[in-house]
Structures are given as C-alpha cells and as structure tokens.
Length: 227
Image 1 (tube, one colour):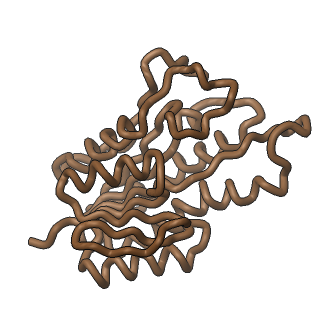
Image 2 (cartoon, one colour):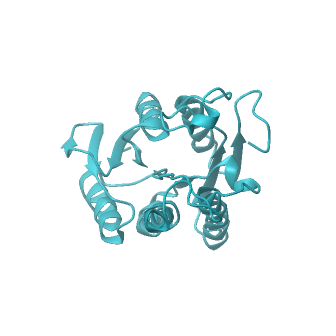
C-alpha cells in the first residue's frame, strides 16, 4: 500500500510546522505548504509554495501532490493571519488591511476544501480546519474572532455535504498558542505550545474510519473561557 499523504497549509511556522513534524514522525508523507516556501521535494517531505488566498494556487497544489505522490489522505487547512482591529477607534490595523485577513482566514480554508475534496473522496480521507476558541464567543473589537466563527460554520457545512462520501471533517479550536505573534496584552497569559495543537490534529486523524471527531476545543490550563 502507498504511504498516506498529509498536506498542511501554513506550515512554515507555529501550528502548521509542528503538525507537519508530528505527521512525519507518524509515518505520513508530508507536504508543507506556505506562501514563503522554497520548492523542494524529497522522498517523504515536500516544501511547496501555496497562497491559500488564491484559488488557482490551491488548486495547483492539490493537483501537483496527487500527480506526484498518487493520493491525498489528510488535508490540514491551517493557514491564517491575524491583525488587531477596532470598529469604534483608529487603534490597530486600518480597514485597508482587513481584507487580506478575511480572505486568508475564510476563503483560504474554503478554497482548500474545494480543491482537496475530489482527492479526499477517492482516498476516504480527512479534512481538518484550524478554528479558534476565539470563534466560540464574543470578542470586542475583534474581526479575527469573526473569521474563526466563519471557519466553524464552514466545517459544519462541509461535513453536512460530505456525509455520504466517507470523508471526515474536524475543526480544531485552540485557545492562546505560543506562535510568536501574541498581543502585548496577553504575553503573560497561559499558552499552548504549537505541538499541543498538532497532537490534537493527529488524535483526530488517527481514529478508526468509523469515527468522525467533529470538533476539538483545547485551551492552556488556566486560560479563562472568555479570553
């Protein structure tokens, strides 16, 4: 049997990089996709350039992976960005900077799902999306939180459409993660390590094919639910 193939977007750092490393350790062939990647293909690891805000880029990635490695078994739609926002003041990023975040965080996983689904249907595979604990409640002055609300709804919509296909769909919703991009106001808060989230992803995809882990919510010990 061919080795299973695990595609991770946003794999240059943080959660994506940690998950890719864990997937390699688990025996997968791993595609580490990111905007900044220098293209390099090995026997089990592939650094691939992909901009998830571009449908053409994502579609090209999935086509190249299936053509070279013959299959796609897991796709982790993890790429995302965050900027500080305010709707009542001029604090944080200006509205001209918001569009990239919304397209990357909402259209990005939607494009990834659409491009990957034919291959995942063929393999009986698994789609995982990175949501956020911030997408489960009200966060004042926080457009990022709204994009992660959208990811949760997106996961539910994809799962409902894919129910007869054998493809499993999981949304992982981490609390604060130590990715190097933490707001100054939260540097002293409890944090998850990126590998903590990666282990949650590997838990979901390692379940028997009869088990579909729909959602995983994980926070660092001591993080308040409203944070």
